[in-house]
Length: 327
Image (tube, rainbow, N blue to C red; front, top):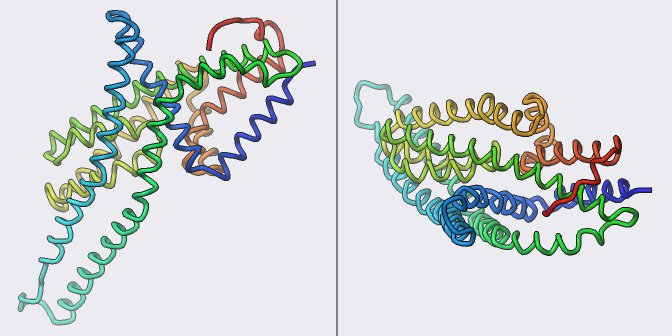
């Protein structure tokens, strides 16, 4: 006898909770991601510095970037939004005698409609501000709490199994190691995205290149949705920097960088890192997005890793469950 059915029950309960409480669990999962992301530079620094000092430096750096992104995002939207409304309100076409009156009326009405639409978009965004702030706090708290959570699970994980606690412990330890490799690969992808966005914004003269680069790096750990988050301030900063040309340049930057990420860098890095074909990764992201929304994108690849590991441990059997190690 083994605990494979019990593990499947745990997995199904996890999916049900995500389905019915995506906001809270989304924040927790993102915080869990970031906790592993922080360990990546810490491990690199530990080769040259004290282990504890490396963790302090890594945590300070990464949490500072996360905090900077959150506290800068809303002020940028407010400031640039005011500038856009100011520019739109100044547009007047009534003084052009070369155009028929009906065209003048149409253009002026269109201007009002655009202004009202932009105002509605900002109002919607502001209505989500408390949720964004709450989510940000949850992410930071989860990021800080995961190390204690890992210690708790290490002590109590075996109590979740009935027939073979040692095998169940080793199964989750091995799955966690695979998940760490996935997040480590994602750090490289996010770093490429952040540097590319920041550099291209600087080259094309879009304001806030440093902020946009950091925001792109942080939000890249939220596939697809991260692009939407970055696009809001980027297009607004593009408009106030270069007008319509700035919007076009912002769209071009987003499309180029994210297409390279989606179809080349992420699949290639992760497929070689996880030993899973890149096409399977892409299809998994699309399917989970359909079922669970944005949080489905966060759990798609971890779920594939879970299924792969479960198949090896509990379906194929063998010596997989005899490996020992630390979480």
